[in-house]
Length: 226
Image 1: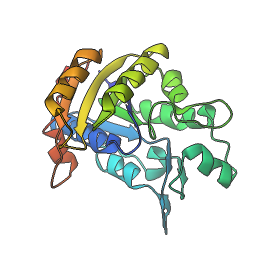
Image 2: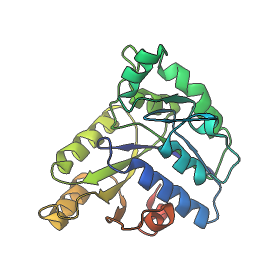
Image 3: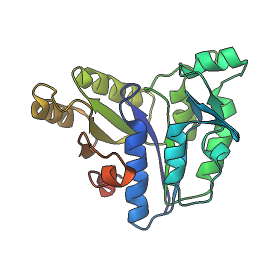
């Protein structure tokens, strides 16, 4: 039976892709087939093959099914700015409808474990009044939340969990990605998050010296997902 999730973060640069790649690697190590999508990415490099995003490439590297880059990341922008601003500058209509078909194509491959990764936090604007969270709603996917553990993360995490619930989606699990290991009262903060987030903690990812999907996977528990 295949399972698919939308993975989001409490903010930008909280380690969404780091955790997503780790989850995909853990699934592959468990003998599951994997697929992933990064519907929109800004901050891309210009290459002979076209724009390429490092996050999307990291996801693609952990996909066991034969996916092309353009399938994983159908909409890419060069400037490292908010996607809706990059789209506006490029003259692209960035709507939920424009992202639905390619992501449904990935889901239709029926991998054992599929992740669709958002950009930034939960309420990221697209064109008009669309938000990237509306894509998760349209796809009806349960959500995995990556909490970037640092000062202020509790409020960000709880507000995001509330928004996900308000949008009618299940919060399937969350991951504590410890961005700042020197966070004051780290263990107490983690305990508060565990008490207040209405979903299982899939793991704590420490600050790793050698960052890799394999190293991150060692700190994650896929079996806690519904």
